[in-house]
Length: 240
Ligand code: ADP
Image 1 (cartoon, rainbow, N blue to C red):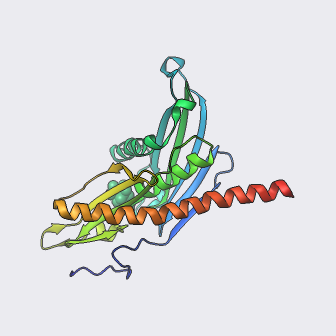
Image 2 (cartoon, helix red, strand yellow; image 1 turned 90 degrees about the vertical axis):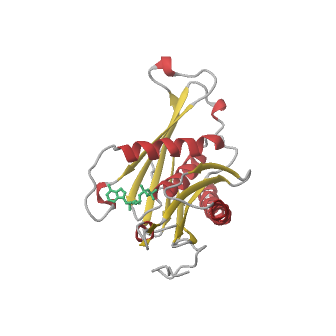
Image 3 (tube, rainbow, N blue to C red; image 1 turned 180 degrees about the vertical axis):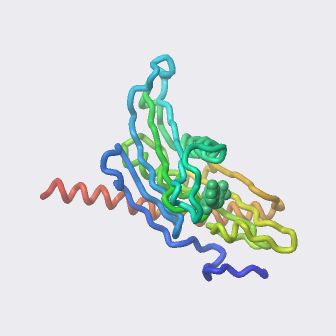
């Protein structure tokens, strides 16, 4: 391999992970998830009655995800408001989370998930999905699993996890980095998101999925630790 990661990480090493639950006091559930300087906050509101009423499904609740990157999240001020990119990420995030949710327990309702990216240095959709799945669990939405995401990439022929913006933009001899955000339901091992930006050979894609799954099991442990922390904090408060 000719490519050396500028922050000295191993190929299977993520940036420093930060996972916290209960960061937005007024939301029904909330969480922060960071891969180094990529920081996402998710706030969950609901389940609440869906309006207008004719959109209500008497059999199950509706999940709505809103992804938004703050103007101050990148070096140059990002134009505020929705864009094609934010609509696409909101859509894939909803689809990535849906298989873990048991919305049949909440007929006629809607669950809104607002994901705000405070700092962006690539991997924001994955950080957002990780934060959102913790926030949904914190809100007490019935779930069969958490959802855990990471981006994997092929940089100069080498598979590496959790790419930075510099790594995503790297180009060598006309070969661009391939970026593959992936999410798993860790208990079942099912993939709920797999996007591919660039080209990759089948055997390399297999390697990328395997390394992503191993990384996601580590991230899953961090998500569970953060959720357990909030439960023990609540128990301590009850005892006081
Ligand atoms: P992801 O953040 O999930 O990797 P993209 O591949 O679309 O999604 O974006 C990669 C990175 O590009 C973002 O994390 C961010 O650092 C940067 N970026 C995206 N949109 C903008 C923008 N409008 N202005 C500045 N930087 C941006």
